[in-house]
Length: 167
Image (cartoon, rainbow, N blue to C red):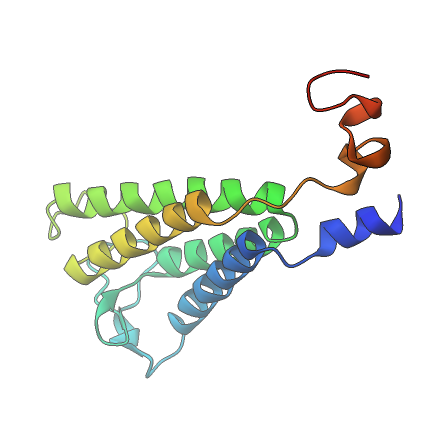
């Protein structure tokens, strides 16, 4: 592996930084969901019960499972942020998952016993905002330029083939 290739794989591209930021935010959200005082009604925190009345920042309903999912999602984001090839798909797929969660929050009866994840209207809007932002970042952030290893001699394409396919 050349030093130029190593430099390209470790460069801080916008998409990698975005995935890193998303990961840090989700780790904070997941961790803070376990902190009494930051999470009101902490004594009602249940594993995966729709009746959990614990609320992060007094607003967002959480459960143990909800917090653990945020922590896992954050950890996956940090791993994905290691390369642009993983960061972009993470932002797109993760964003679509959060958009689906916002739809879930709209279509379920928030007081129903069938809900595994405790959500409320602020959760639904936050899921929508996170999902939309992640998809937008995945689609709109610039793609890294071609790496030096993809170019042939004198800036021609792979194996010395010119832009029109001429050798």
